[in-house]
Image (cartoon, rainbow, N blue to C red; front, side, top):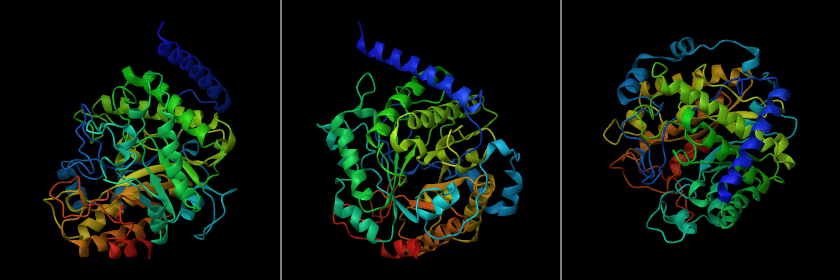
Length: 459
C-alpha cells in the first residue's frame, strides 16, 4: 500500500478537523475576513514548467502593479492619489480590519504592540534574492547547491553583517521548498537545517527576519484553482507545520509569510487580475482559503507561534488585487498579529522595462503615490500593518534617476507607516532584459556596490 497516500489522507483528516475547530472558535464560515496586499514579479523562478517567469527578474510585459504596461502607463499619467483613493474605496466593515492603534515612529520592543507599530519598528529591509529561492536547477547535481545556482554564491554570516551595517534592520529570506520535499511533503532535513542556519545569521544580529514559501506556486504543489485547492491546502499544512515547529522557540522578530505572489501561473491572467474573468475571483477565493490554512497551521504548531506576526498576500502580490474587496484577511485567534504584503515596481516602464524610460519623473511619482495611498486607505488607516517586501528599479545605466526613485519611494512609504524591503538579486550590470540589474550589495565580496542608492534608502 502507498505510504504517501496514507500520510496525505491522515493530513487531510487532521486538516478538516482543524478547520472545523477554527470555524467554531472564530465563528467564520468562509475561511477568513478582511483584506490584504500585493505586487509584481521581481525575481526568478528558473525553468518552471508552465510558468512564464524568467530567472532573476520581473516580467517584461507587465506593469509592476500586476497590469499590462499599457494599463500601467495610463494609470501613472492619468491618476493621482485622490482619484485612486476614490476608485479603490472599500466598505468600512469593522469585521474586515483590525482596530487602529495609536503610537509613534520610534522602535519599540516586541510585545503588546499593534501591527502598525510593529511594522514601523522593522526599519528598512533587504531581500536575499535568488539564493535559497532558486528552483528547477537541473544543471545542479546536489540540491543543496541550489542556493548558489542563480546568484552564484551562498550566504555567509559576513554578508548578513554587511547588510546590517549598511543600515538594514530587516531581512527577507525567500525560500523555495518544493524541490526539497518527498512525496509526503516532508522537507529534506539538510535543506531545513541550511535555512535555519541562514535565518540565524540575521536573527543572531537581532534583525527582523521574514521567512516565506517562495517559488512553490505550481500545479503540483500550490495552485489557486478549485480543482487544486485540496492539494494546495495539504501542501500548506504540511510545509508550514514543519517550518513552524522548527522555529517555534524564535521570538516575534521572526515573521512568517504565507506564500510569494500566488497566481494562475502559465495562464493569460497570471499577472493581470480581472474580476470579469471567472477564474480570477475563483483564484482569489482559493488564496483566501489557503491563507486561512497557513494561519491555522502556524498557530497550532506551539511555542511562540501562537502570537507570531504573520504576513499574507493577495493575488500576485500586486497592489490592485490587494485593495480589492475580494481579498480577505484570515480569521485569527490572536488580536492584531496579521500583516499584509505588497510588491511594487512602479511604474513598470521605469522600474522594469529595459526598453522603457530611464527618467524618474512626476508621472512616475504619481504612479507610486496612487498605489501607496490605495494600500494605506485599505489597511494602515484601519490598523493593519503593511510590509512592501519587494520593490526596486532595474539598472539601465541611470543610477542618478534610480537614486531619486529609491529616495522618493522609501520616504513616501515610511511616511504612510509602511516597511519597505528592497529587492536584491546580486546582478549589477546594465540590464538588457527585465530579469537583471537589481543588485545592491555583492553577495561574494560582501561590499556595498550601489552606495548612493542604499544611502537614499536608509537616510
